[in-house]
Length: 67
Image 1 (cartoon, rainbow, N blue to C red):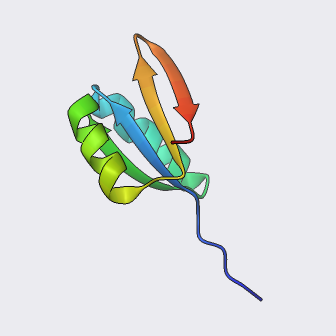
Image 2 (image 1 turned 180 degrees about the horizontal axis):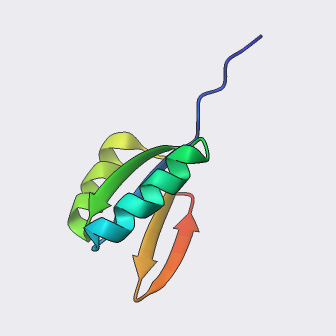
Image 3 (image 1 turned 90 degrees about the vertical axis):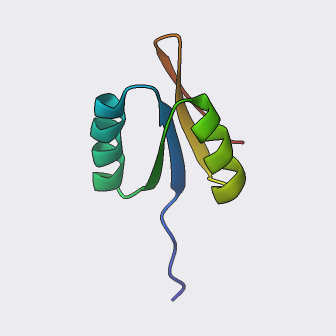
C-alpha cells in the first residue's frame, strides 16, 4: 500500500496571530502548513516550497488557489 503525503499549503497573511490560528486548524485537519507573514515572504516561500495550495488574504477576503 502506498503512503500518501499530506497536501502542503502555504498560508500568507500579515497578521501573525490569525496565521497561527489558521495554521493550527489546517494542521489539525491533516495539512502540512508553511506560514509566511506578508507578501514578499510569501513569494519567497512559494518559490522554494512549491506548495499544492496557497491560502492568502486579499483586502480582508481569504482566498485559496493552486499555483
